[in-house]
Length: 70
Image (cartoon, rainbow, N blue to C red; front, side, top):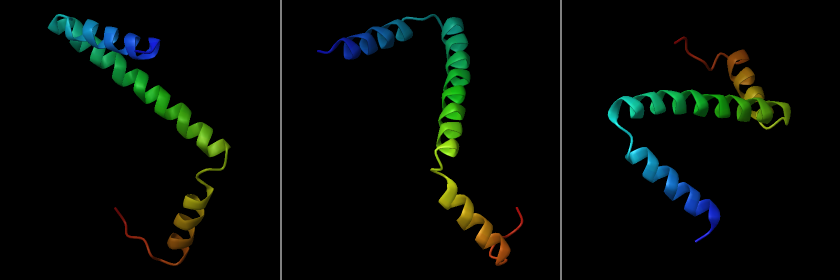
């Protein structure tokens, strides 16, 4: 078993051992952490131009009145 897999199993075990109040606190912290990671990935993808095609397609659809108001 690799060290990373062992660490993951140790983390899972520690999480499942948490009392409910601490588990709730951890869940809130993790959701915030996960959102930060997501935001950083989106920013990196934007800077790398990975979303340019989607943006162009959306603008083209908008200009051609192929959009509906939400």
